[in-house]
Each structure stands twice: as C-alpha cells, then as structure tokens.
Length: 291
Picture 1 (cartoon, helix red, strand yellow):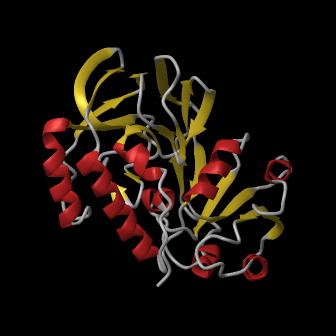
Picture 2 (picture 1 turned 30 degrees about the horizontal axis):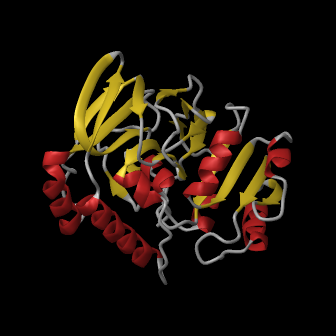
C-alpha cells in the first residue's frame, strides 16, 4: 500500500522521529514516501500518487493537508502530535502513533467536511471554524508552556481574560437566509464541535454531516461564559446560542476574524463573509484505540 507520510518534526515533543515513524509504517506493510513540513515541498508531495496520506502533527498541519489535498478519494490518516488535536479528537482518533499505525489497515473510514469561506481575501478552505470576536482574538495569542496540558490551561485562561474585557458589538448574520442581529462577544461558524484550546463549544457538531453549527455569545451571557470557563469546559455545555445551517453570511465591519488559525484584522470597508461546506468530504481512517 503506497503511503505518503507528511510529518511536522516540531509538533509536540518531536518524538517519535521521522525515521521511527517510517520504521513503524514499514513494519505495518506500507511503502512510504516521507515529506517534512519544515524542509519538504508538501504540495509537490501531495501531487504524487498515493493510496493513503498519513499526517503526523497537530491541528495546523492536519488542516493544511486537508485543505490542500485535491483528490478527496485518497484515504487520510492522522497521527495526532499537537497540543489540542481538536480535529483528531472530533473524529475519535486517539492513542500512541505505533498503535494507530498497526491498526490503520482495514480501519473504519469517517467523513471530514471541508469548509469554504469567501471574504475580502478571496476564497479559503477551512476545517475547524470561521469566527469573529473574542475567540478569534484568543486564537491569535502565543501561548507557552512546558507541557500540552499547561498550554491548554493557559490558552483557556487567556481566552477567559479576553471574554471578560471584550467589548460587545452589534453583529448581523444570516443562517440559510434567515437574518439575526444581536450584541455579541464572539461568533463562530463551526465545522467541528471542538476548537481553540480544546474547548467543546459546539456539542452537536458532527465532522461529516454537511451542516455548519453557528454558535455565539450574547453580551448578557458574558458572566455565564466566564463561570463555564472557570468550572472547566468539559463539565457541561457552554452557555452559547446554537443554530444549524448549510450557509451562513456575516456582515463584518470591525474586530478580528479568523479562518482556522489565521486571523485577519478588521476590513477597510464593510464586507460580507460567506461560509459554506464543499460537497466532497475527506475520507479519514479512524483506527480502534489499542489497549
């Protein structure tokens, strides 16, 4: 089975190494081509024939490959090495790389929708979310920490500080043609239920259902959100308003807006941001967790 391994050697602790991953894939029966995200030409590697593309890295690396892969019939596998690993977690992928590699052959295949957003920059694909306001500002923060859990905790604390201080703004948006307007602190159009520092803010979102989950925080629920963050985001649903739609349009006039982990400053002129899902989804292997 021909495999392309796209590896971010800087993700996580940097272990296992590329050589160790190649050895494990060879032992599992894969004929593997290696590409480092730091030194290789990823687009050129993706253009070569492969039966499966194996992505070893964090959410940024996984999203980059998901957005770039042109042949959606090609199988994709994720070896989660990052801090949050939101994409892998939403698909039910967890475990050590060696165990995941051993279980890849014959693993169930799940769909991962790919979003498309049109704005002043043109069109861009996304995997996690398009968002405006406090969460977009939090995504733009550099968070240091000695361990993954420390970085997650610091990321959530930084987000809480931003929510506490962020000035609510009047925002207008449409969901499948129905218009809404409210004073909001943040607004997110989700493809996945988990985003940012490993926070489940869209508990009903499914990665392959061809539906967007629109979630937002009205100004009057600011303290509820702060209480939720203080209690621990995994304990109960976030105090957000949720709507499902196939298409969302946001009237963007000021404040930061993010597409996955790329954050854009306020536009020079008011702009409509149009968010949809592409009809063709990725096919992602979800191997059973190894004991």
